[in-house]
Image (cartoon, rainbow, N blue to C red):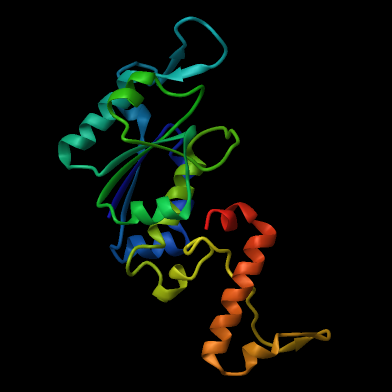
Length: 226
């Protein structure tokens, strides 16, 4: 899989793309991730990528030309399954969306900035708009990192224990059950006896029941969607 992230702040993404699971996935060639500086595609002598909005109003707008130049350069070199724009008014990012994206081959993520991008880019080049939550951030770099992290960890070979990703919260529209490790008792706080029983079917049944209980209490909106 290949993920190209277009940004005006490439340094903000260097660390997240070079640590932990993503780093190992890149080193083992499970995924190729490129952080692309949008300013490299500006023909302005100051490498400007934003301008005032037609009609007035507060805030600057990402200019059409640098974004167009960058995306057209990338799409001339290979086909992309999705060209994603991170935006507060996009579809909500969920585990289901992450699962869908993990099956793609090549993806572009355009990190939004300023007051947004020229609408013509959204109308003619973007194939999908995604929001990571109902709040506003300084830019789309953190959402791009979130999307990338959630997708990469699902790729075969990214996590040594493949079942771990499949048992995460939201994979089956339920929150994950509580987990415990050694020692079995600490400060008088004991691990549930069922987990020490060795009875795998009963343990799995207990975990499912706990997932249902936790989801109903903490995220009834998820449970109601069942």
